[in-house]
Amino acid sequence: MQSNDAASSLIQVEQRMRSLVTHDVGVAGEAAVLHLSAGGSRIRARLALHACSALRVPHDQAVAVAAACELLHNASLVHDDLQDRDTQRRGLDTVWRRHGDAAAICVGDLLLSAAYGALAPTGAAAGQLITRMHQRVGAVIRGQCDDLALQGAKLNSLYTYERVAQGKSAPLLILPLELALALAGRTDAISAAVEAGSLFAVGYQAADDLDDVERDALNEEINIVAVLAARGERQPREAARALAIERFQQCLAAAARLPQDSGQLMATQARRHVAMLTQTRVPA
Image (cartoon, rainbow, N blue to C red; front, side, top):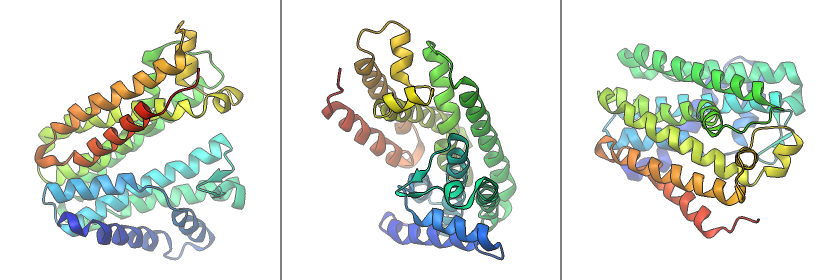
């Protein structure tokens, strides 16, 4: 698969996802398709496609792992929206808001199941990939539980903040690279993918928190600005921005260690975030 096929491959990923959630599943399938149709950056699918291309993984396997990673991410969004009672996602009513709590659970479960089904074209490698995927899903669930347990708490531990941020987001950022590396026989490089994905997750969460300080305070959710303020930082917003920049820059170094430029897209995304954080003045 060549890099100039990326757009076509992404269309195939979209088609694969829809086909997996619309086979004889009724209203849940329709709701899943509507959720997927709302868009999104598809960064996890793109990470998988890029890494597979760089590592010369066969095209059908690349599409399979890209669809699996993106389906997992969307399953987590449906369940997150339900748990957090968020009413809007990408400009549309969330699944629970439109169809109710019980239906949202079913839709999230359908997307989760479809992710495992997406790996069927990987043939003999499927068993290994399913095991790896299950381990990352377990890590996300653990991270989400940790986050929910800390809601309403007055957190002043930067270590705990970073651990929770990594737990919630890093596994599904690591997974696209991990599956590509496993298919290419480069399991020796997975530790670098874990480091890069974990650092990116903390940087992204800290940057995102800068836009949600007031909302998170109202909802009693963890926010890096509040954590740093509780630690005695005189300019917690600036400190939060500096932390995000530092983690993205560390991510760049880890991504550069991945073989055959398979971490290039993650590095590009990290640079983009550093540029935005550097150019944007954080209010006092």
